[in-house]
Length: 355
Image (cartoon, rainbow, N blue to C red; front, top):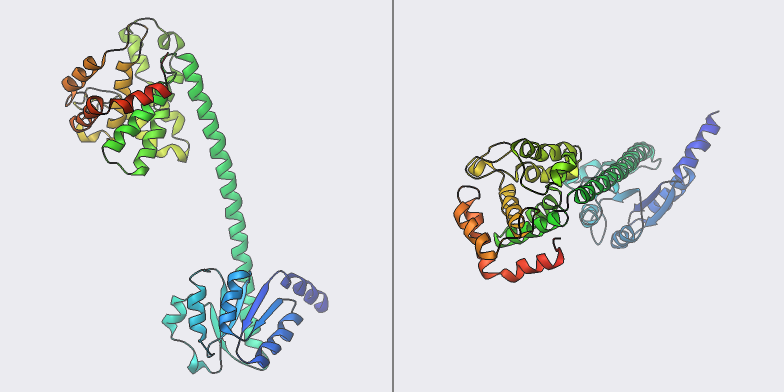
């Protein structure tokens, strides 16, 4: 029975590759016989500099490393290896415990253990077996984490595709929305660039603009497609679309950053907007940017009950509403774009024409 168990253990050990580094060739030869007999894959090296290069080019699970060597000591070998390999399990050999490196060095270099040299290698074998168990557990954890990560990414991708389908469905339901979300996305990013925002905020504005009206999927078609102004009851229903959008998107981690845009792009700077009647700096900054982009596209696009407004009228409207409907700082930057960078606006309109 014991022999059978030993054979199984040796068979399992063949999955692990050990490198031993000692400038005494006799020690390397002895370790080779000892570890190969235990079933491990083994590579022996007497030059510590060669060992560093081997670890760079080959995969090893565990390293047995002499401390006192020439031309460099074991701690210097570990120092170099840790620059490119943080995971290698390292056991340090010393001729005498008094020659071991300081404890703070062992901790800093993440050396997993050390022992004195011995003809029988009994203590070393225990450390190796303990190390292999730790390596096996870590490999299993990495495998599980990788599988979970893959599963989560697939679920998020499927959810994203579903939301994209919903967005396209909204565009089919509402001819005004067709192209509107793309333009709001582009105008938001354009405004964000002129405000000097970092790339992370620009990315949030881009995605937030694309999905800011996703909640319209829950608004009746008759209201979205009405040829004329909405009455109070109809307007009350369409004002629910930010809350509906939040309900749709809040279940996916990838949409968390854009939720403030989706929820608050209809807030007004003076607190008279919806759904939260937030005012001033209580309105999330990126939502204030999206509000400007959304309002501009609404004015610049043809609606069922009116034609698109001329540029001079739009400029007058922004001048009139900055500080009430719009954040004055953001409105002033957008006014500068309208007056001095019209070509950037024209490019968006050409790429995403309204019907």
